[in-house]
Length: 116
Image 1 (cartoon, rainbow, N blue to C red):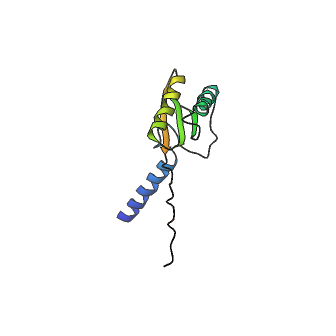
Image 2 (image 1 turned 120 degrees about the vertical axis):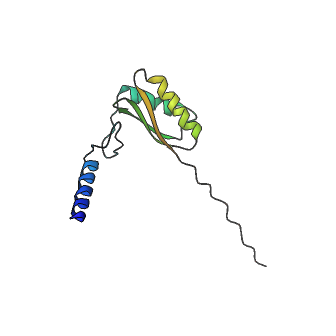
Image 3 (image 1 turned 90 degrees about the vertical axis):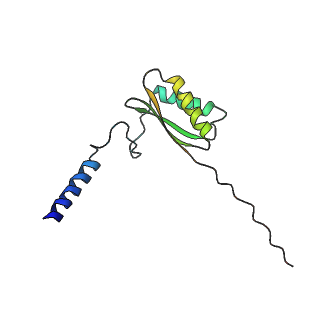
């Protein structure tokens, strides 16, 4: 009987979790198409126009309470800069910065083996 109650509890918890009841705020489901508007296009154009963010991969999306930034950059400074640029366009709401910092892989040169 105890095992049955535990299994039912787990099943109810998982159903609740996957139904979205536990989610509040912004959904990060990437299977849905991005919701863009004039504001997000202006923000993304500003990212592409910035010399420091040219090689970055940053997207702006409409969120229920503002703008959501996603994508990747290589430094904390670039992440902060993207947030600053987006904030300059947003008059109502907030900017949620979910940009990931990815350190570039630097390959070490292979040392040439010398024959003796």
